[in-house]
Amino acid sequence: MTRIYDCSVDTEYAAGMRLARSAIGRGALVVIPTDTVYGIAADAFSPEAVHRLLDAKGRDRSSPPPVLIPGIPTLDALAQNIPQPVRDLVAAFWPGGLTVVLTAQPSLAWDLGETRGTVALRMPSNPVALDLLSETGPLAVSSANISGLPSAIDALGAEEMLGTSVAVYLDGGTAGLGYEPIGDRPGDTSSTIVDATGFDLNGGKVVIVRNGVISRAAIEAVIGAALAPIGFGAVEAAPERADPEAGADPA
Image (tube, rainbow, N blue to C red):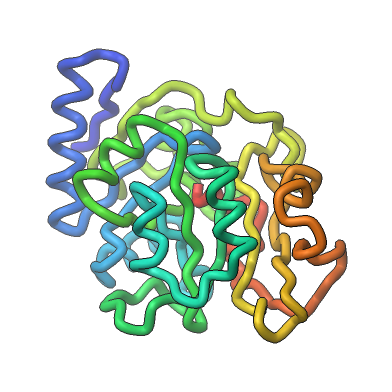
């Protein structure tokens, strides 16, 4: 039986975190707060757990989930050929509402779906999420909702959609309050997604594939001419990564 654990209460936070770690360890799903929206999380290195995540959302392998990480050093462990503009963006906006799509390290023993050799990474700015990530390591995390419905911004909204497909719900209050809702939909506080997988072939451009809480102007202020103009079409993003409903990372 699932339960929502109020992370503002010390005893519930301790119990919820313990059960969340256990759930991730056995391949079950956990709903967590992030700084943008709530996310549904699974062990990124368990294909069975990732499959459960996609099933819970009503998605298939063509919509691979992003991966949330506990710190910037993890970036190089999971991705390769990271261009300097991406490093500059990460330095400016992590932890925070920016997801970066990069070429995955080929040695990684995981199966996130039809990624075409890429991985979408984000370090969230939420203490509950970061506490769990520090214990579990990278988590596959997509927005906590049924595909086609708005992303949940609180634990109750996530539970109403996902129910018993999730083992543990961690309640960290309302998500997204620290951002202006400037995403692709009215009220959208999803992360902004940038794709750098074509950087070496497209003239050295980073492409925004989903508008979110980090504005184009803010990104351009950091990387200047390395930001591709609107409509630049040299990089094709995976469906989940270009979908304004997806939170990730997340979420």
